Length: 359
Image (cartoon, rainbow, N blue to C red; front, side, top):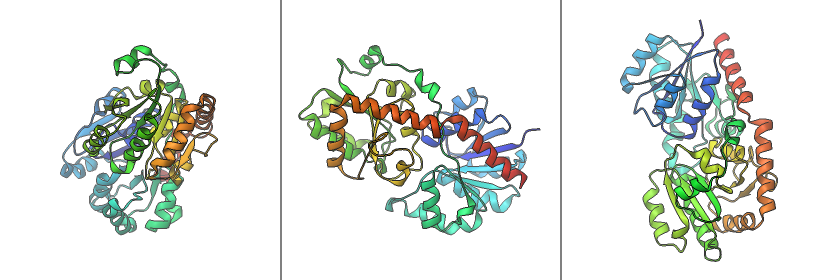
């Protein structure tokens, strides 16, 4: 009988953590996986069913009852609300080990509540997973978690899957792009910490002198209204497309030339990993989370956070130099192949769970 692993998450919306689970769990065949959501199902809920991963959506107050019925070997919690349930309800009221899978650094003053929660509840947690060295260092240095309590399991990506998608003039026309402009894409929920405003400022400066570029913003969120207002008052509004939430991101990446993510903090960005697997030139911020993936001027470009001027200067170089774009894209994909292949990271995840079960 396979060990049962319960994965607790608020919903299965189209985010980095959720897509990580969708890529990874079907490959971990030594376990019986059960995902519990307790807010709403989310747009990826049906895809987990199609992948033959058990999924159930219930009310938050029913979670404890279901877990006791399921009798799991391990409960893994993902993101803030699931972590709260895990530490305040499941851990004290059941015998099952609860492991938070840390996904971000919360390295911004807007997330004071989350940071306070982590500092207070660290004493209740026996063990953590983290998706990057940067996240582990944040929790050890800033939250005060002992280093030996955190195992790093990087996000993984399947290069072969992304390599199947090709450029298509029909697709470009379908989203309103004619001719052959340089296509810049940003795939990220429209949240303040993703830094879209700085990308829009940089793009506007470039567009005044170069109309043969387009910017695609893929994602949605609370900043949408502010960003639309910013674009409406810019010179470059005819060059920017808000595509919203999409289920064809690999196709969008295949039809783009440059990927930009001006994020203020991350865990390990699935969006960057997917762009690297798609052989795109990457421009992102010089934060420790991104330095695990990108080495400046070797397999991508790193810029200061909150600096539209620096984004503009480097983005212009990448736009104007096709050889540089191709070089950065090739090296980015090589990095994925060597260190972040889905098979490598999935084996590490399985090994880490087995170690906990057998300890």
